[in-house]
Amino acid sequence: MTGVWWQQVMGAESVATRDGMPSVRVPAERWLELANAAANAGYARFLDLTVVDEPSDPARFQVLLTLYSFAARGWLRLRTRTPGPLASVTSLFAAANWYEREAFDLFGVHFDGHPDLTRILLPDDYPSHPLRADHPLGDEPIDFTVTREVDSQW
Amino acid sequence: MVEAPDTSQPEARRELLRINLGPQHPSTHGVLRLELELDGETIVSCRPIIGYLHTGIEKSMAARSWLHAIAMTDRLDYLNPLGNNLAFALAVEKLFDCVIPERAVIARLLLAELTRINSHLVWVGTNALDLGALSVFLYTFRERELLLDLFEEMSGARMMTSFIRPGGLAADLPDGWMQRCKQVLDALPKYVDEYEALLTRNPLFRERTIGVGKLSAGDAIAAGVSGPLLRASGIAHDLRKAHPYCGYEQFEFRVPTATAGDCYARYEVRMAELRESIDLCQQALARMPGGPVRTPDRKVMPPLREEFQQSMEALIHHFKHYTEGLRPPAGEAYVPVESPRGELGFYVVSDGTGRPVRIHERAPSFANLQALPAMAKGMLIADLIAIISTVDPVLGEVDR
Image (cartoon, rainbow over all chains, first blue to last red; front, side, top):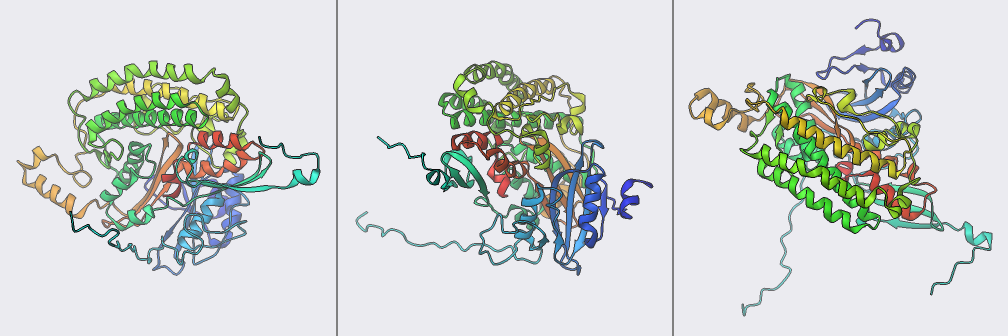
C-alpha cells in the first residue's frame, strides 16, 4: 500500500487491523490538522469516536476516529495516543460533539476547543470516569429492608 | 375559558418559556429528556439530555467473557436484538477469521430482516400513536406478535434472543419453522396495505408530517445521521448495498429513498423498507440451503450435543468452550451493518485472552438523536413529538 494519500499527506503509517479498514496512526499534536486533511480528502462524514484505555502505557488513551467517504466508498480510522488533553475535532465534524462528551464522561479525556465539554451519560456530580481500565467494576449493595410489618394474625 | 394572551405588546411576545419534556413521557420513546425554550408554541432551542438509561454496558462487556457479551448485545437496541447479535458476531468472526456455513449465513440474513420488519412495525404503530391515530398501533402489534412467536419458537425468547452467535447460530431452525415463517410473510403485505390505508392518504397524518422536521442532505451527513433518516433526505446509502455483508449481494432488493427530508418522507422510506424486507425474507426462505449452522472451527463454536456423546475431542471442546469461553486472537475489528436505525457496528479489541479489552458500540440512535435540535428548531411543540418519533431512537443503545 505505497503511495496512498495518507502516507503522502500525513507521513503516517497504516496499522494492520483484522477488519481491513485503513487505520492510520497520527501524532497527538497533529490530530486536528490531519483530521482536517482526511476531511479534505473526502473522508468528511463523521461516524464514530471512541477511546481504548491502556493504563500501562504513559500515553494511556488511544483515541480512534472513524470517518467515511462516499466518493471512495470506504471508512478511514485515525488513531492517536495521548496521556491527556487532545484537540477537539468538533470544528470539523459537528457530529463529534456528543462523542467527545462521551469520551470525556467515561474516560476523562479532555478535548481542547470543545464548545460544551460536560458529562453526557453520567450525572454531573459523578466522581470518576468508569470506563477507564483501572476503574473497578463495582456493584450496588442490595439493601434488604423490612417495609411492612407482617401481621401476626396471618 | 382561557383568555387569549395579549400579543399586541412586543414585550410580552419576546418572553421565552423554558420547559422540560420527559424523561418520563410516553412520546419520548424511552427516557429521553428535552430542555425546550419556547416562544409561544415555537421551539427556539431544544437540548436533549440523555443518560437516564445508562447501564455501563460497555464496561460490563469488557469485564466478562466474549460469550457473556452476546447476551448484553440484545439489550442495547431492544427492538433489534438479532441485528445486534449479528453485528457483534461478525466483528468477533473477523478476529477469528472463520468460515460460516451457507445455511447459517442465509438464516442470519432472514433473521436480521425479520427483526427489521419487527422494528419497523413498532415504529409505524408508535409513530401513529404519537400523532393521535390510536388504531394503527393495535394492528401493528397484532402482526408483531406473529414475529415474536417465531422468535420464541426458534430461540426460546421473544425479544432477548442471543440466537446469532460468533461462528453461526445457537441452534438450527426448528422443524416446520420455515413453513410457519412463510405463512406469516405471505400474510404481511396485506397487513402493510392496511396500515397504508389508514395513514398514507390520511389528511390529518399528512398535515402533521409533511414539511415537519426537515433535514437537508448536507445537514444529515454533517450530523452523522444514518439509516432511514439519511435515506429520507435523499442519500441512497444502505450498507446492505454499499458494503454487502452476510450474503446481501446475492439478493434482489431496492434501497428506498425520498427527497423531502421531512417526517412524511421518513414514513415513506420505512414503509417501503418494510415491503423490501418482507420480499428479502421470502427470497431467503426460498433459497435456504441445508447443512450445518455452526462453523467447524471448534475454537469458535462448540460441537453439537449429538457429537460429543460419541467423541472425546468434541467433549473436550465443549468443556473448554463453556469454561474458558472464546479466546479471539489479538487484534481489533469493526464491522458495520445496516440496523433498522442506521449504521450499527461493534468495535471490538482483543488481546488474545478470554476477556475483551474493549467492546464499543457505534449506535445509530446516538448519532441520529444528536440531529434532533436541528430538526426541531422553529417548529411547533406538537411537531416535536412527530420529529422525535420519526428519528426512532432506542434509548437502550443511546445510553448504553
